[in-house]
Image (cartoon, rainbow, N blue to C red):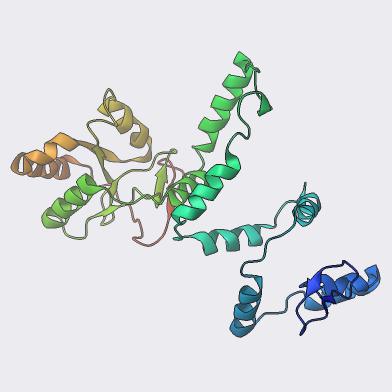
Length: 278
């Protein structure tokens, strides 16, 4: 004889259970449900409890009705910053399996494309485009925004930068530090290397492809109001080490002796000369 869930849903259950998982609360009135929910808030589950819950949910699939109820419940609600931070930290470093990627791809297939997209057929006005452009430029002037972008993109030294870092350490040990990961922001720009031992010096490494067509003087002028002397090194210059060493030494001699103190471990936003030191 089949055993049925005592909540009245009509689903068959295991002989050892009285309810389908989660259905026991259906027999309570709204006030009792609220009391149960409040009593469970903030309660930490043990690792063993978490393991048992995970095992009990393995293989279970939610009905379309349940999924729709959950969607309606969270619609329009904003997650607290603390919850967003925890979700972000829990997903950091995780890699999706090929199966998960395939499922995500299939679930998104055909969505928001063509006429289904709410922006389909709409053209942005010149005013709207200008506002978006100015808004984006303003965001990139914020050190907090730039640092957030750098962190989210997982910026690390590339091979040419590691090569140059090794050369700088050979010539001037502990003088130049890589800060291209967003540690130091100056006028919305993130320099590659900065002197952390008394001189206001910046060294930028320009990739032959990514920086093609850019003028060195433009970047130099950006950092100049902040009291920095800037040296631009092109990726192709790494091929002639002796010549590059000479260029770096000449820059170091010619640079001013303005004092600056950048902590190797503290993120900083540099202010223009006269508005305070870093």
